[in-house]
Length: 121
Image 1: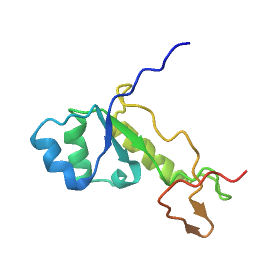
Image 2: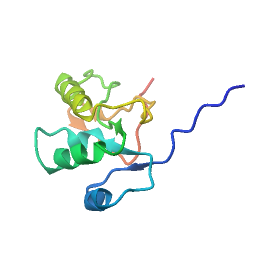
Image 3: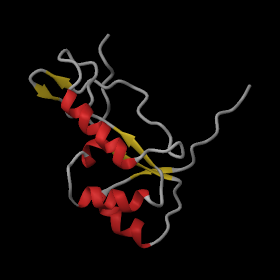
């Protein structure tokens, strides 16, 4: 039986830690971002992400795709996510994340949960 290689140690990227991460090397192999926090056209979040991604692989984790909603996927959201993926230029060095299909939108409002809610079957 073959073993899957460890993706190393990753850590969630938080705004409160930007300066510390940029000031000195961190003992992490990669950072994970919540995609929605960086789906903005310009500003400090993107500037910090750009600086940090030069030294660390970035794994994207979206929490608002809601592919299981009755309304279907939000095309605007998907376009913004694609743009962010282009900016981040995710590499194979960062593990792939979110192997689930969260249900986060129930017409007419978006649900905000601390944990992903499985898609109803």
